[in-house]
Length: 186
Image (cartoon, rainbow, N blue to C red; front, side, top):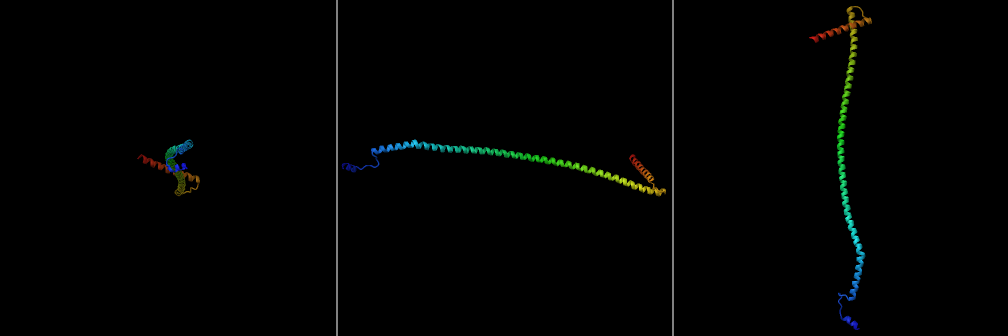
């Protein structure tokens, strides 16, 4: 009892551990700390390193992606510039082709106008020749009638009519040539 009596008499400070508790507590602390340092700390360090690498890699990938986007943008701008140059070249080529077509159409129109003019001249000449032949026949018939009345005999014979008409027209042309020669010498 004495033992119990001594234990009851001394109040123990709950904040100060006993030597056995202190040794057991320190031994437990070092075991747990050693286990954490050997097992969990490498894993935590590895996990932190992986996250750091992932973040750094993400930043690097983002930078590479940004660089790639910038290169793609520059390529797009270069292609756009090339397309603008090509469009300008095509517009110029279209203008030149349009001018060539207009010049060709003008040339074709002039050729067609000359052809039409020549055809009209040929038609006029043919009409003039026909009119001249018709007029000559009418003048001949009138001359025969007039000569028949003047001579007093009938000129029904075809050969005789032809000779009279030819002689009359030859005299008429000779008089006309003499008149134009006299005007030219005056």
